[in-house]
Amino acid sequence: MLRNMQGPLGRFKARARRVTEKLGDTSGNASIELALAFSFLLTPLMLGTAEIAFVVYDSIEVSNAASAGAMYGMISSTLASNPSGIQAAAQAEASDFGSNLSVTSSEYYACSSSIGGTQYTTQAAAAVVCPANASNHYLQFVQVNSTATVTPPVRIPGLPATWTLHGTSVMEVQE
Image (tube, rainbow, N blue to C red; front, side, top):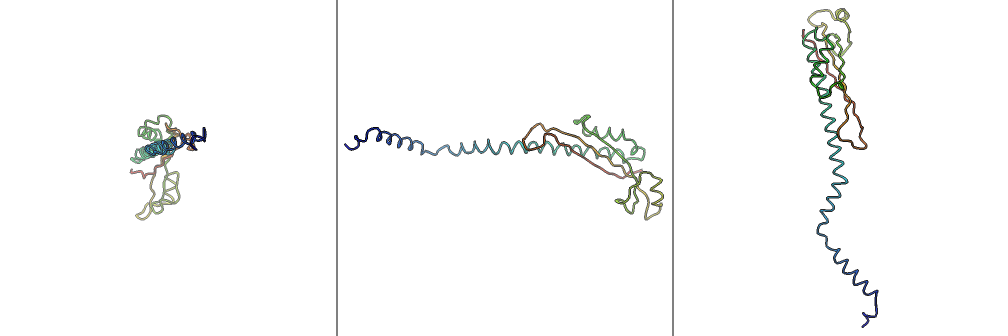
């Protein structure tokens, strides 16, 4: 009889107890947590990884273009002094960049005893410093630099909108 005297407050408590019993069931919570974690954490991480992967791939292509140009120039002294041929070889290697790939080349001479030392712009200057003998003589090198600016297809806030990639290759001229 005391129960009936509580009136609306008693009915509210009974209803609240039934609702909490229904909410106490935890099946499916892991699925909801996984969905939230995936949408807020994993999706940006996966998209950021995809953007970096595109940039790394393009960077390798830019470096390979510089190597292809240097390989063309290393065949002979004539080809080493042919910047348009070196540029064509480099752009053929990275054809998907089109005119966005910038290629510059230069040739220089160095003494065989100190290849990393002084660089000479002419053969005559190197011949004076590096007399032709068994222990020291001059060597000719071709250096190719390639540059491209790329915009990844995936845009992630916090990462640059465009990336400027550089490649450099130096090879000794064979003839």
